[in-house]
Image: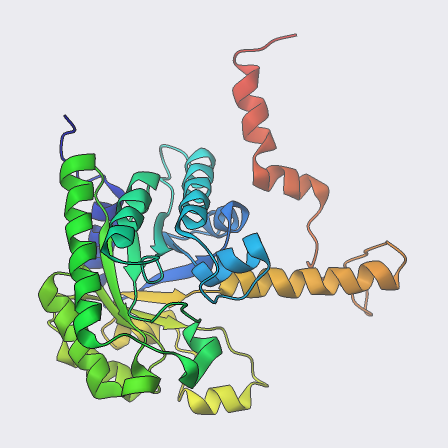
Amino acid sequence: TTTALSSSSSPASRLRNLCLTSRKTSSAIALPGVHDALSAIIFAESGADALFLSGFGVTASRLGSPDAGLLTQTEMEDATKCVVSALSLSSSSQSPPPLLMVDGDTGYGGAANIRRTIRGLACAGAAAVTIEDQTFPKRCTYAAGTGVSTVPRSESMSRINAAIAAREEAKNIDGNDILLVARTDCRLERGLEEVIERCKTYEALGADIVYAENLQSRQEYEALRSSLKGETLTMLAQLQLYPNDEDEKRRIQGAPYTIDDVGDMGYDLALFGVTGLQSAVGALQGVAREFFANKGVVTSRDDNTEIVRTMASFEEVKRVVGFPKLDEFESRYYHD
């Protein structure tokens, strides 16, 4: 029989402890979004304590498609395994790998699908998984706006109850601890009052972390946080905006919030879910334009000949993907 996991070194326990430790300084934990193993390694190198494997990002990088319910449970589980493995291989005993929260969407179906999703991602090494209350096929909340459709509160409660049961099975039967993140996307469809009621319900049911997507102002985020128990772990999600996105900036007052802002509002995790994807798309677009404009030659320089790091050197690519570590490992066992 499998012994239930009780070690404080499990990814779930480490993420929980990381949140509690950060609370002592009123700090939020930065949670950058990644979309594959390579993007995860790069953020890990820059000091990330935790990462978010985005359903939007995985759908885009793996399928080249929009986040509209097209990605399957097995594809997301496979992506999780790849990211967890890559982070582990690139880390050291002195520097443990970042913890991974995974986007579980709606759980990919009914109660049995949710069960399979939770236990599969726990087995894959995820520290936490999100389950949301959208109808199927789901849509990215920020992309769909008022087009987002959510299930009735009673049905969302059933989803969270199924996820909690699966979380306990993962721990007690499989020996894999995982945190459940209960998410609501109902703000634009049903209003702030319903957001608060759903989050309070998820809290009461036993979710480990609670969060709401796409609230419309700092005041709304503060109202939600003050409605929940002080000990409840919470998350605030955002997109990276640009100065010329005036309409978007007016719509979400005061955004984007810094990690310090998020901590000041009482939230534990500051999620920027598609930061890695936005960066990859921007860099690839720039290089692609230069490639064809210069007949295949990419200089990675601007008009003032100052280096613009749109493209890494081949030596840097080799280092990032781990050739030096691989060579060092093999040299211990194979000699000319």
